[in-house]
Image (tube, rainbow, N blue to C red; front, side, top):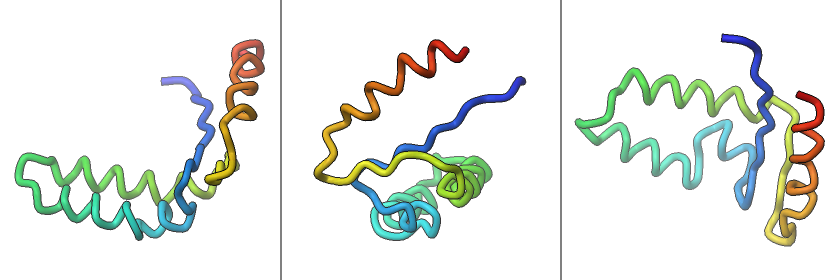
Length: 81
């Protein structure tokens, strides 16, 4: 697999909650941990990814952001590939 461009977008969530799997992420992961149908190895990979992603430069869209800045980014990405 080749390189992939990753642009984290944190919308209405704290980056620290993602990194430390706190807040809504904590309850979501607890439910996955308790679900016998969910592959625990896969959940471990998700946990690792969520710990890494906040270290990548990206966008933080707060409640007052309307997403227009994000939408305007997509044509730029397409022209670079």
